[in-house]
Length: 84
Image (cartoon, rainbow, N blue to C red; front, side):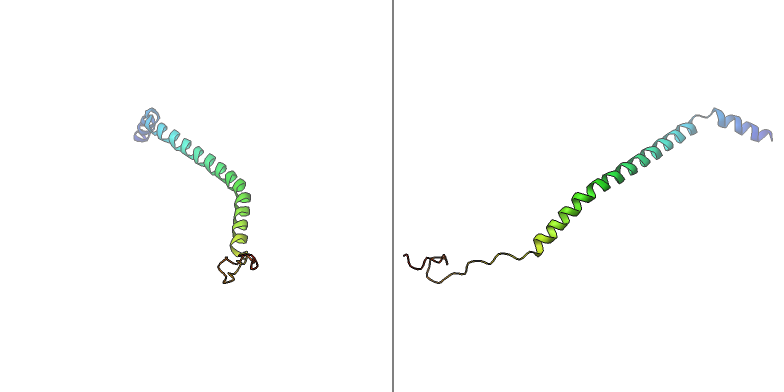
């Protein structure tokens, strides 16, 4: 019993463990704050991200305008066959 009492008294005087606990609590608090902040940022970014993704999907699936086929008269197919 005396040995347990000596260990308890030495433990109370030792400040190194207290510093470790304080830094651990600080890191835990900062981690929770970062998770909360990033969760909120994720919600705020989701709307614009979805809009951009939809716009890109529509742009890649939209048909391209048909090119004016060349007429073979050397004018590039502009339809001005009467003027030379």
